Amino acid sequence: MIVTVTPNPSIDRTLRIRALVPGGLVRAHSATAEAAGKGVNVARVLNQQGQDATAVLPLSKESEAVFASLLRGATPIEPVEIRGAVRVNVSLVDDEGVVTKVNEPGPILDAGEVEALLDRVTSVASGATWVVGSGSLPPGAPADLYVRLAAAAPAGVRVAVDADGDALRACLGHALALIKPNHQELESLIGRRLPTLGEVQAACDDVIRGGIEAVLVSLGPDGALLVDRSGAWHAEARIDDVINTVGAGDALLAGFLAGGGGPDGLVAAVAWSVAACRSPGTAVRPVRPMDFEAVVVQPEPVSARALAA
Image (cartoon, rainbow, N blue to C red; front, side):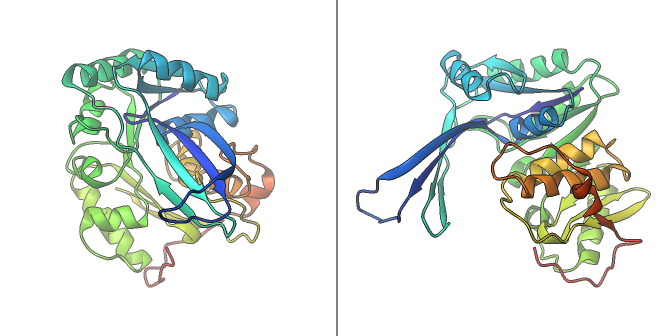
């Protein structure tokens, strides 16, 4: 079983409009809502692909009812009761496909609610293979929440973190099993541009020397790079039938964990990401042989390769 932790879940509303008119009245011609948050997304993909995953997340009683209704039983959740209502993120999509996003900060978590969240992880994750901390932190949460999450995980359970900014920076120097930044998040973490695959690998090596066991970097059209203490592996998939890239990074992480969470999991990671890119919405269709066939594993990373991401 895999347990995901989403400290700042959301209800994502997508409004489709003709055009965005600043300062004017804009009428939506369609609207949808989804239960979301990076850890929720990872758990959803895992369950869609037949894997056992549970999402732990802070929700008020009122928000829990709405969240459960939107999930329709497809993703098991372990809600930790808090006082504030779940945030609502709004995406405005115009007829040209331009997306304007407005994300709320989320409810404030006090110290007691943070401890309750960590305690729930300790109890739920007994017997799990992985605990995954994902996404932004809400107001009031400590920057080192994911480090505390790793300390709270039962013995023998590996911990992965998919975050950015201060939440990811706080993980440096701690013995986490995995972090999964994208290209831009890794650049921000390291504090310099990383225009080539070799420079990305060197940055990952720096992170690993600090104590983290492995780094999985999503590189958009350039695939993904896995670096651990024994080496580096690069895989990619050049496909011309991309429908939707939203959620591809969450699918990448889900596939990697489902594939064992090591070098052998890199092919599954990219294949699951391909399936997400070939799916019209956040519900990833079943991963097919054709998705695995699209994956190319390079014999070794080409250091001089310039990255498009």
